Length: 234
Ligand code: DC
Image (cartoon, rainbow, N blue to C red; front, side, top):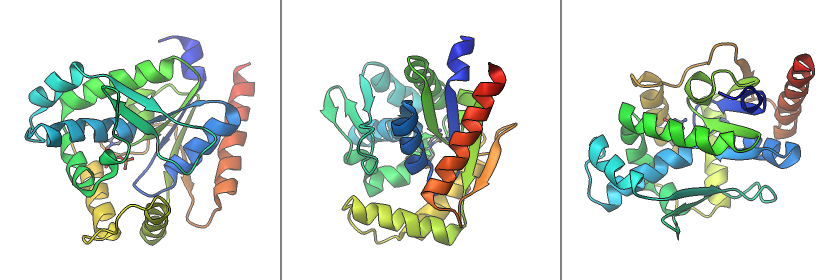
């Protein structure tokens, strides 16, 4: 891989609700990096499975359709409260991929090694075009293990539940009967225990526990680390 590309990549991994998206969007906006929401790509393939009545464990059938489809991610750096806009064959699916049904099935689809291999390729392609900040579960361990800065961002469960509820209400997503806490706990457990690219702390990652930190404090810490690393390289 091109050295300059790795030097311009920040990865942020961590469990659901840890603040990865907010921080990644701030870094994108203020440092001029492309924001790559890798979770949105797993959600898109999950929607493909659900809409086409494909068993979410059937990687072959999901990929057959995915490979023929165009998937576009588009983040507006000026609007950090919005989700990445996703288009599937030109159709805006931003809202659909945040539905409860996709949220419940995405952990099944993202366990499939063939799906992961395909999406890691897509994520590297998108991030390879410009200096980028990637956010997800394996962006530092698998997608860009040589990134100049790898962050593992976490926070206590209650704090993560609180943040996710706030995020959902700000985005006017319907309240979920199953409860945000249950969904987060279930996804964390599947994401961390799966065989293919589980959520782990990547080698050499900087661990940040943001439970008692503000967004700005977390942002500053990561920005300073990024500048230090870049200076060291030059
Ligand atoms: O970040 P998110 O909540 O949109 O991610 C949805 C799911 O996608 C998450 O539960 C696990 C999966 N995912 C993954 O396996 N690897 C990534 N790099 C990003 C997300």
